[in-house]
Amino acid sequence: MSGYILEADGIEYRYPDGTWALKGVTCAVKEGKKVAFLGCNGAGKSTLFMHFNGLLQPQKGLVRFAGEKVTYDRHTLAELRRQVGLVFQDPDSQLFSANVWEEISFGPLNLGLTAEETRSRVQEVLHATGLWHLRDRPVHALSLGQKKLVTVADILAMRPVVLIADEPTAYLDPATASRIMDLLDRVNREGTTVVISTHDVDLAYAWADHIFMLDAGVVSCGGPPPQFFSDREMLEATGFPLPWVLEVSSHLKLTGQLRGETVPRTRGELINAIRHNGAVKGECTMERAIVILGHGSRASVGDANKVVMNIAEMVRTQLHVPILEVAFMNRKSGLQTLHEAIAKAVEAGAREVIVAPVFITKGQHLREDIPQEISAVQAAYGGRVQVKLASHLGEDPRLAQVVMDRIREAL
Ligand SMILES: Nc1ncnc2c1ncn2[C@@H]1O[C@H](COP(=O)(O)OP(=O)(O)O)[C@@H](O)[C@H]1O
Ligand SMILES: [Mg+2]
Image (cartoon, rainbow, N blue to C red):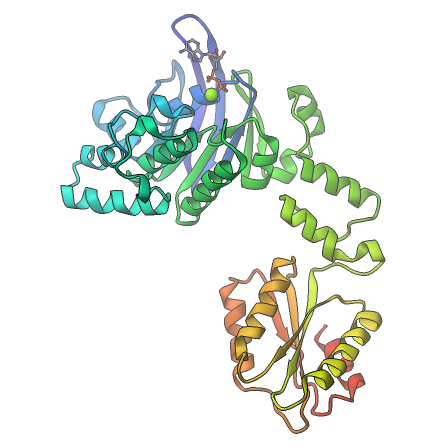
């Protein structure tokens, strides 16, 4: 098994008026991935997508679905269109029913599902797309963004293996565009391969696992976003700019203002990298962070605060490791505090979080559920982050040096 769900092999296509839209397109889409076809207007993106779900038949070359050559008999075509759902760029060329509910029911009914099965699928996608409140609205009375969501819902109701969306964000306001992209992300996380076309380099860079450049009817190159955008010559030749996040972060790296291995792909990731990497202040990166966990129920808050803050300051200045969170845990807030502190560290980009419990009250012991809880948190992040416990930091909080030594050991 090649792992490719869709393949184009030397596809050529001329429209009846003689326009040569595809001039030998060869590319392959891996199953389960998010793939973007980047190309100017008229590059052939829509024409290629119509080949992927059998609406157009290549005049030369062939399409493979799940490793099988697509043939154009009725049965194979019907099956292909069921498995490969195409969301059109212009919703008006896809929508034709009177109201939203009927519109979304059409596909499942056409697949031969019973009225009951259809009802449950329609309900499911209306909720997933946030369109439930519009279910009885006439389709023509919807805004463009709403229509776009209905076209995605239409396809989702068919439960395709591959969802192809032709310029899913074109003409949408930023909020609606990100709603659509969030929806496509969710669908992908649930196992569907998602393919989009776009001429927005920022969108392709932030979103896709793999990008193809479609240029004048030919796929001229393809690769994961960082490699794809490292080919400056190709970008120049095709007239596309660098994604702005990549341009700014490359500049900051070049000038020594941003360090570390992480390559931010979104505005949020870039801001986090700048805010936390500390390189600007001559410190180290945010990939590793310490959560200092004040631990005790009877100590006065003021004293506890002072002790823990002192330790935090020592760690910051002597070990040059950013302290992400100084959290206090008592019996009431319990493990919630620990969870929140780790979540903040991860959100800020930390890959390794060291939890350092500091006992405020003499004679206290590490809660036995903390090591277990730390393993559970780590499991919940699916291995994306390593959470370590700087073990047993001593009972006397004045022994800050001991605390330091233990943290040093954990590093
Ligand atoms: N129905 C059609 N008849 C004739 N030419 C067409 C038709 N649709 C698209 N084309 C032409 O085919 C080329 C590729 O178009 P298209 O696939 O729509 O590109 P894209 O989606 O990348 O903008 C363009 O030159 C376009 O003008
Ligand atoms: Mg198009």
